[in-house]
Length: 116
Image (cartoon, rainbow, N blue to C red; front, side, top):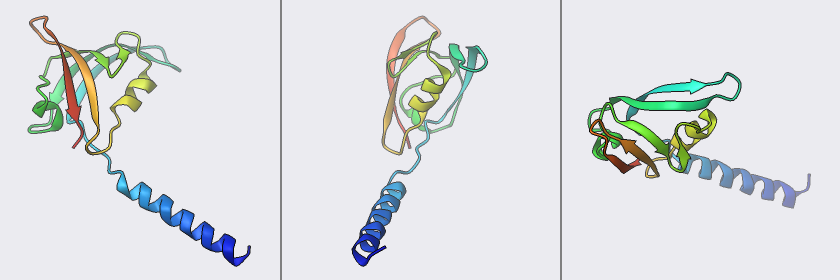
């Protein structure tokens, strides 16, 4: 490898490692009760909020224990592939995810949670 290639390679590695460090994993602050159908490619049948982290992102957004989640971003439940839902929930600090929620009284609301 010549000097120019070595310098270019070092610069690229430096850029990649800086980018990787910049994205800090965020937390949504909730635990879910998830029912899914299927083994190899499960599809979500229902999702209910089981627990909230006190003072966490979901609680701050107005999500309540017992809320039924009807949509994660644009992925409708029932029918959302579990892998898609999992990826939609992974957020870096400061990124948001929206939920269409059905509350105990039947009211449907959209809640946007910003990962902390």
